[in-house]
Image (cartoon, rainbow, N blue to C red; front, side):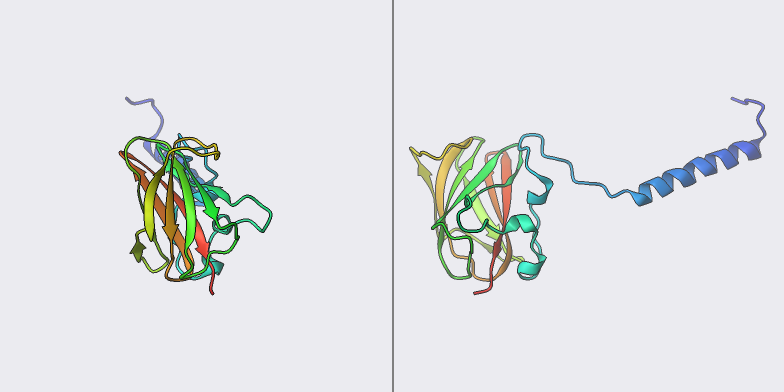
Length: 174
């Protein structure tokens, strides 16, 4: 459709719109979308981060003594919670720690952890289904034992049926 406007003028206007659009996009950083079902803060998104504790996100560290050693992971169609025992704020390589998990979804829990170098490990034991508990979070509860072989950020990934969740934890140098 010809509007009577000279072609060169239309091209300049289109080029200006394209330039403004490109400049706008270049100045923006896309934030990851929030999982619809979890309400998890963006800082808890799973990511395998290379290196030791310095490269781990702040949310990967367990709280200081006296704080709750409960953490919410991110979820893809599910909610995921972890409760750490013994109540120590530091995870160390080679030291076994018990973690109670609560996860929504259906079916058995499958769980593994991926370390800073890409190594994947299974729990030292579990997951064991817990029938009754005083810990009140959504979903069913399981217990696992973990012994992380190296320091750094570890991404623990849990799956139930067609839903999954993840939690990044920092394993400190011994």
